[in-house]
Image 1 (spheres, rainbow, N blue to C red):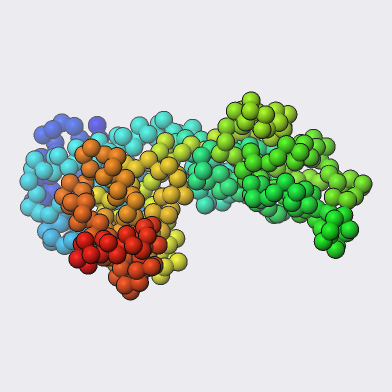
Image 2 (cartoon, helix red, strand yellow; image 1 turned 120 degrees about the vertical axis):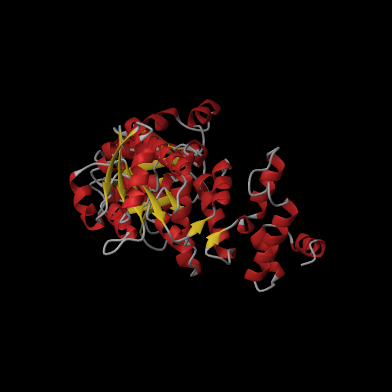
Length: 455
């Protein structure tokens, strides 16, 4: 049976709760009228749910909620109070309360809310059982993963795999769609490895032309070509003892692939214009958004280089496959762009969060970050609302959903667009060029919409 602790300084309320809950024969209920003894009770006994009065002398309901949160106690909480105070309700929710009910509480309502809270608890326990072999808490080097925000079982499993391979010196191939966080994973591999105190050098292989890459990658000696006035170390030598991250490895030309293969095989290389080999201890982590097996079949990528890079392989799933990470990522980005934009936004309204979770993100985490960045920039309230959603995001639902979900069930698309353009115009001080750039439309289109919506 699920165990419930009911805390209230009113004996009549406790009696009402006891009778109501015990009639269901689902719960084991304990009553406490003295809130000063709750901390000790929670220290020695386990409960699934606390029914908590907010207005008590000495130790209040908020004090108990803060204690539960501070000590990471695994318990659901439902607040009961005689004061209908919205601000108090919001504070309670931020501290982890499941729901907030105003007295006098209807018997059927309290039973319904308790049942739903227990359903959520059981679901969380089921998820934990499925993931218990791969918990963030079990990582030995949590600091290495501090910049990866996730509660997804598949992603946590990847973190454990990273920790296993980090202590080796073998090369790693990370693959996945653009915007999934491949460089962040590469940095975590480096941070979890014995090389963490050495350099991590990130290079976008796709930006170097064939004739430039050898000099940048391997370095050169003075006089090796026009403009080589001094000796220069290349990326591979700069990263000696550390990690060299090669982004877009699939873009390298075949001649450069041959030279990279030699570095991986022999752990030595030649600077351009030199006949003297240089030994290096550089770990190479490569990433790609291409299917290298297909590139091999096309003759664009060397099979031997693929197998040399692919000693350890990590696939980063697209965001649409771990949507449970959208809420924590969204709040992480709010905090990030609050600092950059000097804002104080602290929440996302529920209807907007539901929209964010319905979207498939072809640009993955990077696209979610850009959306939140935009919303924080233009939002004028303390919460992100539908009015601050990017124009293209709103139109994607209009074009791709037969039944446009809330909040668009309540507001017409035209009204949402009008409010959004109005907010951005206010944010830019009426600067139409800046407004058009933020909205991602031309200035002419913006002027047309301003006239159309009579702004």
